Image 1 (tube, one colour):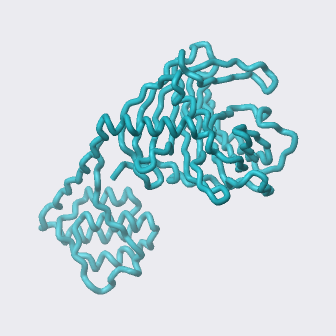
Image 2: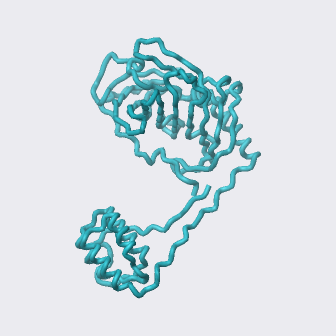
Image 3: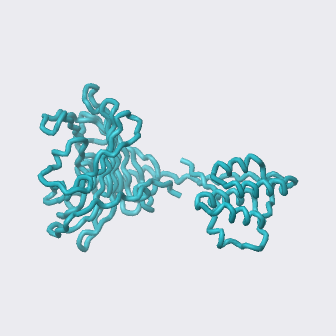
Length: 361
C-alpha cells in the first residue's frame, strides 16, 4: 500500500492577512488561497482587493483560472486573477510538485503475527466472561432503497433501552421516530434486525471447532490508534452464523447457516479487537436474502470505575431481490445495571469520523 502526501495551503480569515505589504506567491499558494476562500465564503470584493497585493513568482495560465472558477471564485476575484495572469505572462512555468510517497510499513514477521493471533484468540474467547451487567441506549436508524442503487431513504429510527444481565441481552423499545411507544417488542419491529454485537460474533469466529483461516492484510488507524488488520474466512460447514427471514411479524422464519469472510482489527499496543467486518457467503440461491455485510466497531467505555471495550456502532447492509436495507446501530450512554434514567429523546448520530479508517501515516 502506498500513501500519497500533498502540500495544502490553508486560507485563514482575509482580515488576518497582511493588508499593505506585497506578497510573493507561487501559483500553488495562490490556488490554495482561492479555493479556501471559496470554501469559507469570503466576500468576493475583499478577495479581489487582496489580490492587488499579490505578486506571482510564476506564470498564471487561463486553464488554472478556469479551474478556480469551477471551485467557486467570484467575478471580481476572476478579474483580479486575469490581471495577475497578464502581469505574470513573461514568468517561468510553475514547478510541478512531485507527491511524496510514504514508505509502506512492513508487515510483522510470521512469528509476530502468530503471537498476536494467539493473543487475540485468547481475548475473544474470554471477552463475554469479563463483561459486567449494564444498561445502555441502543439507537437503530433504518434505511431502505427499493431500486438497489444505495440511494437510501430513511425508514425509521428506533430507540431502545438495552439491558445486559448474566450475559444475556434484553431490549425495551422506548421511542420510534422520537415518539414514545408502549407495548412494542424488539421482535415486533419488522424489517431488518441483528444481534451478536455483545460478544457472540467475536466468540464464534475464534471457537476451535470453527477453524477460521487467518492471514495478514494491512496496517490501519482507527480513532487515532495503530491497528493490525487480519483477513479471515469461515466455510459454511463449520460456521455458526445464522440468518433468518420471515414474511411478516407472526410468520415462521426461514433460517440458514452461512459461511462468511471479513477483517479483524487488533490494537497494535493492546491486542484488543477494535473492529470486525463480515460478508456472508455460501447463501443458498433460493433464500430470500442474498447479501449481508456488517461492520462492528468497539471502543473503550467507562462503567462505574472501570473501562471496558464495548460495541460503539454496527452497520448492517442486506439485499433481498433488488431491495437494499441498511441499519446503523449505535450504542450510547453505557451505565451500571440498576442505574435508571429516563430516555426522552434520541441522541444525535455519531460523527462519521468516529469510525473512519485512516492510513497508518
